[in-house]
Length: 224
Length: 271
Image 1 (tube, helix red, strand yellow):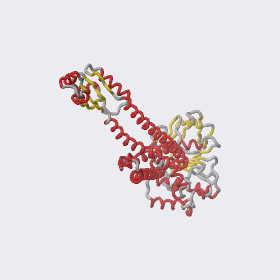
Image 2 (spheres, chains in turn purple, brown; image 1 turned 90 degrees about the horizontal axis):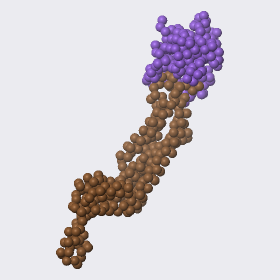
Image 3 (cartoon, chains in turn yellow, red; image 1 turned 90 degrees about the vertical axis):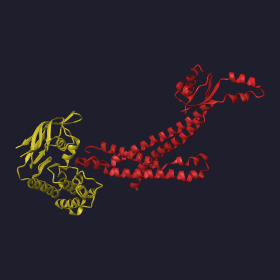
Image 4 (tube, chains in turn blue, cyan; image 1 turned 60 degrees about the vertical axis):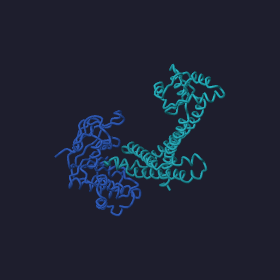
């Protein structure tokens, strides 16, 4: 199997290297794997995720995602690479002035799909996250759990190669959490989507022995 | 209401800049013809010991455009009334050669002095009269008016620019969330700033339309009925149809620069 993510002696920091968050970490994640990264608050989980979608450039070491070196990637290439990601944020990051349906099809809009395709996909995706009747509503009319499900539907809109999820069920009720975990697990098993979930605690519903990394003292270690 | 307010906050400073641009163009057009009138109506007097021509004078100073000899017989006729013919001929023989010279552009008092010095360095030229005082006072008044208006237009432009920058900050704030989210998902710059472009281009058209309408009113209605001679004579120069394109081009340029500034400075994820 090929590596989708490959980090070697990776160092991540803020403020021109003044504040080191991750230091000398090495790991790789293969296509179709479901991986958990855990760690206490402030350990650098979200920082790692940021670096994976190219928002934070590594200070040292190397980081390859989908075969692209994120330490030395052109802006246009990064833009193109990001269209293959499905990103789920803890704080949802929905566009408040857009309807739920428009938010969901954002990746399709960026890829230039026709309005017909966008509408069809919006209905299908909203059905998957159990929000079929919410297409014409606005994000601020929805509860936190519902907004997160919209974020998840958006992440799956274009059948991404990699799903990067930052605390996707952080503040959600059991029902919303289960809907989200089911979706991600199915995508991983049926579509070979690589799923990387950053969370402070692995949910108990997971019975399969997924790979698990822990961030501790600036290092990233695999838990066996 | 908020929608209209947001548009007006960009349209008003844009109109102020367009008014400045149009006033500047009108002023340049009308003052150019006034300047030409001053230049054409002005001539220097040169007194030479030998006959000279324009080419000779042009070698002495490049600003000399043309020259014309003043008929000496006419001068003698004026000053030697009642004097017999032989004396008249003697006067004519002793009289130097007089020339009116015209310049190629409107030149200030210092420039006139320099021309005078250049001409006086030639041994054949005995005297140069620039009539500098009369010329200089008209020129100074003209320069002052021109400078004051340009200063006012410049000031208006700077104030309007600050208002546009302020509006850009409002845009940046109100479009930031959407643009950042779109960037994370790989949207190119043009797609990210598409909404902003639509809004701004619409405003640019509205501002051009209002400004053009204002000047068309001045040209066709106000100027005709004003009873002010200069306005009625220069009516054609008040607003030309080509000015609409200049105004539209200027407003679109301002809009493009403003939108790109907002789009390029809105980066990253808001934490």
